[in-house]
Image 1 (cartoon, one colour):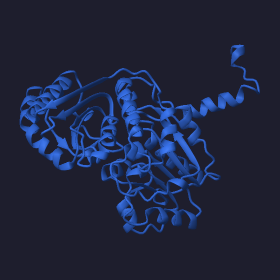
Image 2: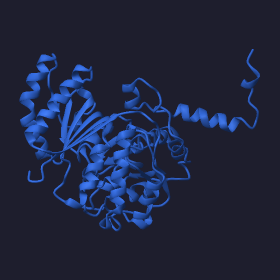
Image 3: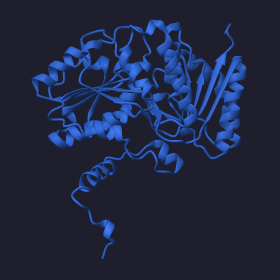
Image 4: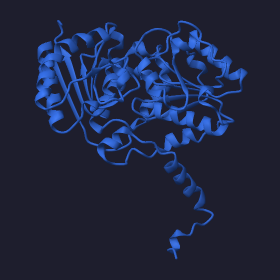
Length: 370
């Protein structure tokens, strides 16, 4: 009934099983859904290998990943595997991150999610397994690392930590001892961003490694090795536009014009994010942008709704700070002068900002005197 090449030999079985697992463990990429294609739905080989770890043997794991390499996706898949293998309830698995918006994003993922601050303050008697994400941005205000280790050790649980020091957004101690971050797994294939955006990210990572002050502020040799293996996992086209020496009024006019153009092309507001260097800068830009954009959107019969990063899954225009949008993503991103007060973090913040965009990135800078 079947062609002869459908008959598997014993030599073919391992390859077939690996391909089958990759398909079964596939995830729904927002970019795939929006582009109407499936190229990002399959796990990369490296993601598959990380997820294939024997959790009974690898109870503690440190996962280093480049921007856009799918760290949060893999973290959520690990949570799913923990539930299936250990038959856990949602209350027994804890997801910890630094920012409230990412915490809210993960709330409905069959686990309990909290911020690092809440983790240090609250008691979790039911928790057995802990997955920590964006750990490079944790702050050592207490003893989060020791607390997590004590919980999983006393309850024979799983402890995985995901991090990317290219996207560090503060200069404080994270609470991680770089010499003890073993065993390690690396994610070096960028799956989230279009090729032109990946090229910008690659250049920013190179500049970060060239900055002398970063040698001691990150696990430098590990990050250098990750960078050497960096590659874009696809060839999806996209747009990158950079503009400098702009007045605030010019930025407002530009963003308004571009947003109207996207809406007329059929993009929903839920595809767009506008990111500023701080929350106060985001509020100021919103106050200036709102009136003109609202009036012009009414002509397109679209109601303007601004929301913060917590509402990233809603069909609203997100306007927030780069830091609060960390770990999240949208198809179209406007980065409004992503320059922090601490100049040593400028490249890191820019990288964090541009890597939020799937296919269309607009990077706008003020004049130097603004």
